[in-house]
Length: 332
Image 1 (spheres, helix red, strand yellow):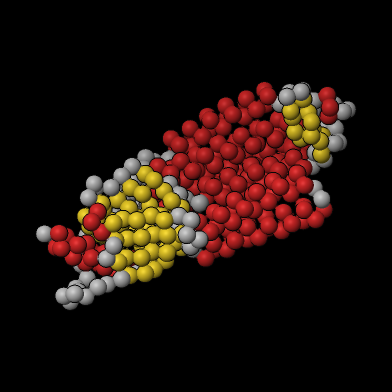
Image 2 (image 1 turned 90 degrees about the vertical axis):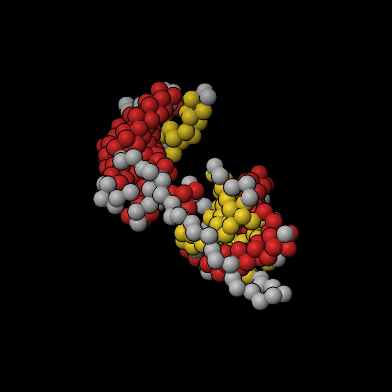
């Protein structure tokens, strides 16, 4: 697809500029109402009415974080891929979702203060459900506007040329060993999350809040499991085929050599081609995509593909093509 199709500018407008404008407008509206609402104000509603209260100044802060920072981060996450010329369903979807999220939070936060104007006690605040309904409706409407405001995306993928088998002397064997891992920044963020959750769990056990400590401990364990299982994979190509195993040995995937129809080194984009990162399943393919860039693509005899991102994918593909060729020759 041509790089001048306007996709980048429209995605930036829908997923970054529009959410920022909505967030600023919502915060200004909330600041203008602070003197007319009770303090503390209702900030959470249950089935029977308001059941959570705090300073009304918390509302514009939360609007800025959840209605501004989060949608803008979501919308901007696709811009680099689009600028590189990549196109795909997810790259068009995320800016629209960002706009819808900013709309929902803006309406919900502004509405939560508006229904409390003139009250002397926040306990008397009416139900938040009508505001929530308006917010969901507005989010859906603007999300659709954001979707159709962007040009249609045709998924892009570089063609894969089967690798030339590595030249081996008679009786010679070849083994390739490498790693598939996340970028350093993404890995550091995940490790930091595990550390923070672990420290929070320890702190809650120390202060004696057992219920919270159990929840936070479970969260820390889940994060640790995810970090061990989905951030680094060991990749091995040998006479048995391709083996991909997580660093903690909790996940293991194989393509037997007799099932290898072809191997190729390709360039992949996690967002545009696979809708994200990690272990991905899409029609016709299973992939371990921990970053965008080089990848080894193995086409099985059934036609289904297995893809794993790694450095030096060309050598890995050549070795796998060589052992697959030897295996076919041995069967003849």
